[in-house]
Length: 259
Image (cartoon, rainbow, N blue to C red; front, side):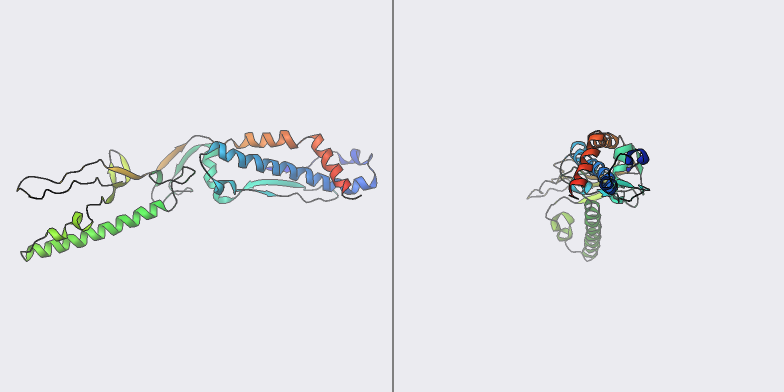
């Protein structure tokens, strides 16, 4: 948002002393900056209202370009803007719409739409998809290695049970990437019961004791409804600081600095 300074300076300066004329550009710049910083404050405060938890990353996104005074008032403006990273995220929170693969926050193939591990602000941790991807690759490599060892042991007539994955992993549930009931993503395998001490041929003693657990769900698109009321915060700031009273106060402040 950009705030420009435009008024009939010819009529105004007729009634001003030379001292007042000297400080008028500074007062105009200070007036515009006061509006911009008020807007920055309201935008930051609304972050906590619109989003749950601590979102300092988003709050740091609002910055002010200050107005520079000049005698002719030409091109005098102040601006409150959003840094590129935060703006890419807030675009859908402000305007709504459909986010797709390639937009801010997406992976190379899909958009994360659910994550079991979240930040204090309720967002999926940025490192979480990479963490799950590495865990999945490591597990697949381990399963392949153990499968090859079982086959080698079987060909030699040896016991294959030492190379069972659940034994090596000490019965900890693993993960996999797949689509279950139309939901694609990373899933935690269910925990298994311990095997019976005495095994009976044909009787399965190891069973799943819980359901699959979704860890990270992905989708090619994600639909957003507007939740960050950007323009409302700007209107608040203008109501507070874009007034003749505020300008008069800034003019007196600048004049007092010259005395």
